[in-house]
Every structure is written in C-alpha cells, then in structure tokens.
Length: 113
Length: 115
Image (cartoon, rainbow over all chains, first blue to last red; front, side, top):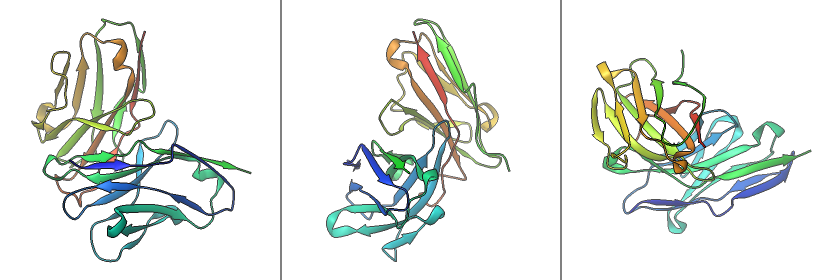
C-alpha cells in the first residue's frame, strides 16, 4: 500500500537560513509526488509536484524538491527561509485508481528572527 | 476566480447532536473530495464524487456519516450523531477530473469541536 513518511514533526530555522524537509514514500510504481503548504486557518496550497522527467522540480515561493528513486525520497528545499514560510508542510503521493492523495503527517516549520 | 468555499469555518456542538458541512467547489470542477484531518495528521480521504456520483466512499463511516452532491455541484457532509472522536478539521477539495495531473484545490476547512 502507498504511504508517505515525514520523519520530522517540527523544525525551527533562522530567517535567511536554508531549509530541507524530508519525505519518504512507499509506492509500487512510478510515484506522482506533491508538496503542499498549510498556513493557520488556510486550506492546503500546492507548492510543487513531480510526475516524470527532470528529478529537480521548481515550485512556487522559491521552493524546490528533488526526487531520488534510489532513496524513495522527495525532499523539499529552500535556500533562504522567510518568516512568512512558517506553516505546516505536507508531502503526498498519488493514490492511483482511488484518485486521492495520500499524505504524510506533516512537518511544522517555525522561523525565528 | 473564487476558490473552494466551505462553511461554517468553525462549529462547536455537544456529542450526539447532528452537524452538517457545506462545500462549494471551483466552477467547472467535476471531482469533489471530502478529507478528514485529525490533529497532528495529514488529511485522509472520506469520500470522492465524480459529478453527482459517489465513486469512492470506502473510508466513510456509514453508520453516522452521510454525504450528498446534488446536481453535481455543491456538496454536504453530515454527521449524526456526532461523537467526541469526530473533533477534527473537515476539508473539501475539487479538481477538474480524476487524474494525477489535475491539481486538487482545497478549501479552508471546517473545524469541528464535539464537547
């Protein structure tokens, strides 16, 4: 069965520092992978997605993610974090014929000045 | 263009009471999803609609939960009676169709508290 693991529940970084959020997936075939961000009181917003091709994908708000099949990972990165990036981040994999997204438990990002 | 609209945003009820959540998807989106998000967890699918047809409701607790999508547009999710464990955020999402390349757009959710 498909699953997503986000090993870090909570991460704190300083403003201006780099960021990497980890995501590992379990999927039998070629995965379709997504990163969403959820700010307090807001719905989930899609940051980026990977379907095929270039394993480094660019998203909105300066985020990027790299798909590594050998490690079953799809880590999210940002070179310089802004205070407005404080939110919860969810990695997800496409559930196949069910048509749903299978989400990890999320990583809460705090940004200190 | 308006996004996915959900109401109410917050609801507090006592256990055993009924409650209903409403969702208006993005215009033209045939596929509608209801997800449940417990505290500290990612969203989990409850039910998916293709137009007015529920095509995947395997995760919906049918003894107390029901949903409908009349005319293939708005949708209502109902709980009757509510239990303490139903306290969570209920998210609605919509997409153009059922395909991995069709982005799912999420509403802000309804936060339910059952006392």
